[in-house]
Length: 379
Image (cartoon, rainbow, N blue to C red; front, side, top):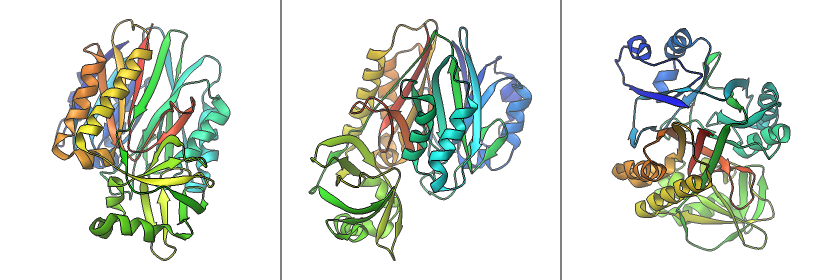
């Protein structure tokens, strides 16, 4: 595997910058929202790389090497030496279409020889858990699956994905990897700590939470947030929920608040809620989040074989973590890059949701408030 990366900034000559990139089988583009609001970037990429798989999305921050950027577009060109990549896309017609859209997307990818799938979804009007379930219902749980949901700098209004047909705010994009020498590993870790009691889910529907302990969920949530409640739903990124089972055991899953409904007193979470389970609020410190990112990298590195040539790490970290860490956000990316080593090209983005294997369940799940790492190499 050979990789080459550039960072585009507003005002750059895009055609000239792309001309410096070598031939590639895969182009990954992670950028701020303005890069996807017109077809200019997509058209330039297609002209320069007419035969490559192209996939990308809008972000809440772009990752390149060991730094976090804002307002840029990070392009990573990948030349595969003993494997191949094929892209797929499908529209998503709102949150209720999430499972079916996942199935449609998976069916575009040939099953024969499929070694792993990278998926990029919209970051609003989607049930990320249902998307993952739909994908796995077709490709199975043995095929590695990872990726994330697009961001829009924490606004939760309009996000973009980039596929073969260009940028769109209502499509899912996937890249399927093929070849018996392709290695794809992933892992995630949070670093959040619980506070307050666990509360029983007494009414929910899919990813909408109506009641906890028989009381309106929004009312309980506002009590705990205090002054932070005035900034909802944005402040919800700082106080996610941990999902617990009916026996109060941790599921290893965290759920971010995507929206509130004052009239119904409900909270819309980024993924499905266990109707028989419990929820508990979480909070974090910067040091704890950085340690969590390093832990995720160490787990991925320990489980990967020795690559031939360079490897590629795609980091997807939650926008909520970025808000907590503030000016120290570079430190979590530095920790990951240092752990993975100099032979690994690092790219990625801050997201509205992360998709990765779950250490608690073994299969792939939607995560929130985690640092997830997808590590691609060729044996």
